[in-house]
Length: 275
Image (cartoon, rainbow, N blue to C red; front, side):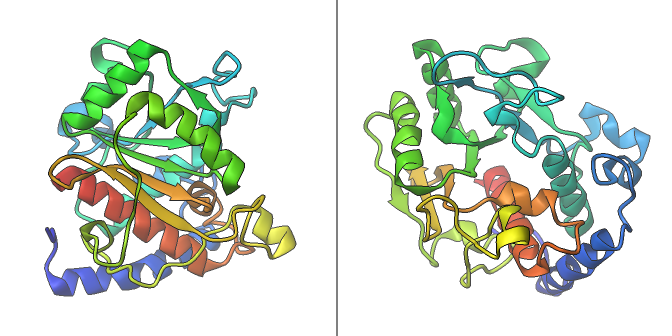
């Protein structure tokens, strides 16, 4: 389902590169989170007026604990947080007509009330080779996805990371296959036509020129679908889209990688909102 007229889509496609050039010149502001506060009015922050809210999954790490909250103490769930999230929200606001909440929301699988995952039908998770779930958490995530929720996972690399990711994923869906997404899958054509995809590297590219991490040489776009063929879990393996969003305002990080990362993320958001 296309949400914008063809001419608007063409203008927005051109706008990705223009917007990134502005970010790399500092045109999105200079605060510690990439200028996100400058890009939104205070009235936008009222939850009731937003069509979409970005949420990030805080999970327990295999071996125990969640490792902190990302501010001063590193935790795997919090990689690139919150700058990557907020810079993505800047792009989403500028390149689409979605009225998005201006800041991210961290969600847990045991939270209730306003911070319950069911109140956020789209969720992002990183470093998922480290995650694990209790039986109640796995059941809740499974029910969330089967009822229409959408999960995007990113930033894990190579065969060992894949095996560890699957240890957790099989707790959620022990009997659903992992499918390779192809150029024909609608998720790549909701707004941007993304038939030409390539590996999006993390920040290590700036110093090394290397697009891969560990033995993750080939980018893999995969998914778990429901019985109707809707993508419930979008799996970005051997790539680091979050780093591309975070580093989009740094002129040392190539624009082509950041542009693809934003296009992919926007397509995933629009797909998750309309399917």
